[in-house]
Length: 146
Length: 146
Image (cartoon, rainbow over all chains, first blue to last red; front, top):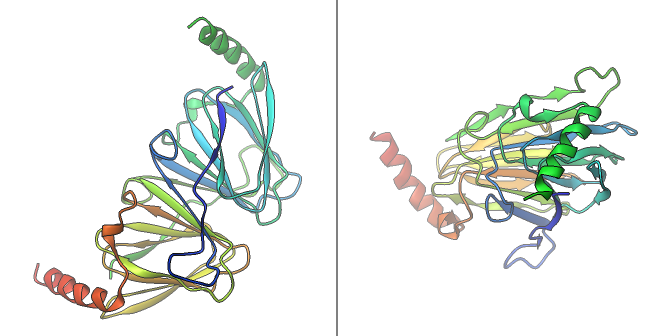
């Protein structure tokens, strides 16, 4: 499964300032993430007990970040499943193509930001889980033959 | 002064779902912001009574967004000064070249995100206010002659 946790630079406080100044996390395209950042989006004010996601992408690459509070992510293929907690603004979850994702346990005030490699394209979404399983089985079989 | 408040798309809830699902704000480079998003950075856990910023850029364009809580921004040139409150994740502040900026009144849990048109380049910063005023006077005089 094409996922990876990325630890970004966490710059605490500021040069030449003695008092605490907070945290700054910089992310540059093609350097800190393996794609051009063409699109970003963020989820805010998600009610408790809400599950979002429920889709896969055919080609899109994304990095998910939780900038305040915490969110849990499940990522799966027909063959494996993993659970990741995002609770640190400097910790990102890279998700490649053909991975089913669900996001849940949004804490009050949580901010889930997503960096995406392409503009929005509804054609790139797979929103039906049964169809995803069929396409994913073909996809991972063809990968295993390379 | 080259600044502008931008109202981004605020997608409330989700298609085909009857219960509240939260807010989603998408931003695409060159469409929703007038530049390629080469770099992003975000400030988190900024202590109360902290002022950040205190610089101008020579050429960089940025959009500032507050994704949780609220932050106040002052933007100025030698000739004018404005104060903007960011307290809505769908409201962005575009800041063009040669504008001095300070960020303050970070609320607890606030997240200030910045989208930037270029990679980090220390040469593009003006951090000395006196020097900024000199350069800015020349800059705005040369603009007024065009």
